[in-house]
Length: 355
Ligand SMILES: Nc1ncnc2c1ncn2[C@@H]1O[C@H](COP(=O)(O)OP(=O)(O)OP(=O)(O)O)[C@@H](O)[C@H]1O
Ligand SMILES: [Mg+2]
Image 1 (cartoon, rainbow, N blue to C red):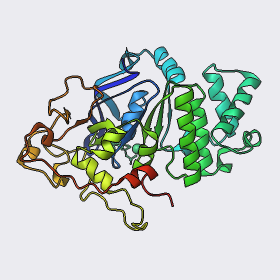
Image 2: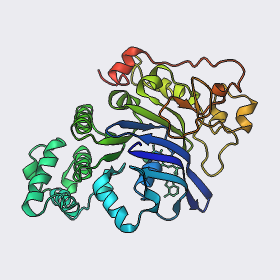
Image 3: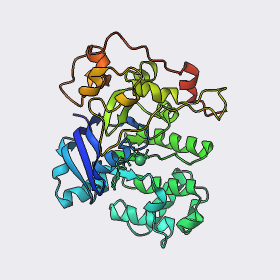
């Protein structure tokens, strides 16, 4: 049994414009201690999926279908007490918008210490000491002094690290990180990634790492879920994903990675726009943007299949190399030759953003 099993998860928001299908039949799993990257363009449903794990979807949104199991227990049927314990002890989330996670009227240190007390990890002065050591661990210099500073006295990168410290305070088995290194400079980003590495190896913490940065995925993740229009369109180990991307969308994302020597101004993107979540295309949601689309793609929604055999996956959480593209079921004429603009050098240096 995997630590986390998400099956056919669907989340909708009821808005003036109509029903937004933010997450639409998403399935994946995370094993103990492993780091799973969730990638995809803006609007793919990455944050909504992350929030759903902790049942943090509020009005006008709702989880309308599917299941979330943590160590085999059904998260969607937890009582409020069970939910509180789950959020306090088992899983923690660091939000995409770190500023919003801190209260401007309390010092950063007090907020970290309070989280520690609330989780019952330590109390009184011990919680303070622990907060300082956590702030140190996430790379905040002079943490004892910084403890008494207010959020507005912290830089964006420091706020981000403080939020990470809060998420770590309950020693979760699963840490959900939404864009934890976005906006950090390269050195701090490397430090945060190193810290995550250390955590997953020393505490066996599993990490769901939501990111736009395929370089981060290459460096830090064991497996990857590629999301498009609210669903997983490819799932693979990092090696399989980079060396054998099996969905045209994944290949397009890879092609968007700037390569060494390309110059910073060249950043190709996939032509077209993310599917409209209120009125998604029929068939494969990627077909309007897909260079390989054929009539079947407009009419039939491809399910996830094993890319080796073309067989549909019976168990939606099977950890194989899966892609949702008619190519792999043999419904498209001929094989597709994806032009993937990536080489070993790019993979090894993590997207070529390093000098
Ligand atoms: N509270 C909300 N009300 C209405 N629609 C929402 C709400 N939250 C998210 N959505 C919609 O759900 C879809 C998925 O959003 P989500 O924030 O999960 O995308 P994302 O993949 O995290 O994007 P980004 O990379 O920009 O963070 C989007 O179409 C978004 O507009
Ligand atoms: Mg997001």
